Image 1 (cartoon, helix red, strand yellow):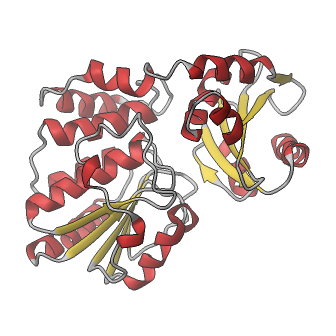
Image 2 (tube, rainbow, N blue to C red):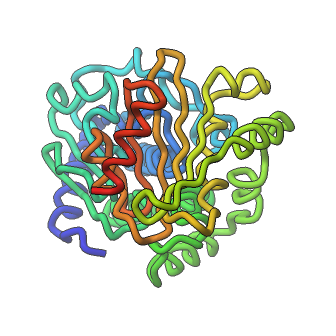
Image 3 (cartoon, rainbow, N blue to C red):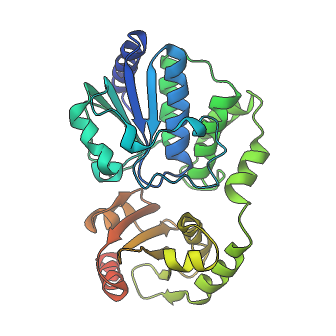
Length: 329
């Protein structure tokens, strides 16, 4: 991994000092946390508790945890962001590519005694007092594992479950190009703690309400292939309202792009998700020929080369027009 050892050491020093003093440490992943953001938050939170810190783990509003992640160890100890102290000794941002991804909690970067940013997104500009940012890391949990090692926190099944959830999710069950030898080395280490990796994968990838099948049928049925756009684009759309019509929470829309991305004739897959306020959240995946980090940043978002996203206040046609222009640039 390419993260400077000095950055990890500095972050460990800051966190260890807070823990030794029994000080308050607030940890947060990004808005609408995925397995990597939440797994990173919960694992580091528990590690710091064991070291003696007063830990407040949270994530930005809306404070609604997806059913697919609510079973993770420590999830029941998450605190509503409205109840988070505004002057902790340390604030830790996890898996957030920009300050905007922290929502209202971004203010803690200025009001906390120290701030530590732990992330693996290539688009992260580097914010906070201490930055542990490694775009080569397949998941933020990889960096959290390094921090836990530096804090002399032994990995057990609870911590390993959180870390494995993030690792398997952000590597697509180790199918994506970000999987490298050290990814499997960490996975093996986590497996040695006795975690039930099959149960973790089933909960993350193979469990959904029956209504998901109806939603999937509707969304894939209106998919559009545009091979002349960039290296090829396939896109479709859904909305929070449509999800509710199928008896589903809006977080069920997140998995749609990983179905659409299987289209062989398009390098880029895109799902536009309509929000109740009229905006669109755009999720993109690339099969390798397109740098989606560049595209997302140009449109106000961020992410990785092969997976990125952004938000748009334009209507559906306007959002698609801007996306096509960037893919052809």
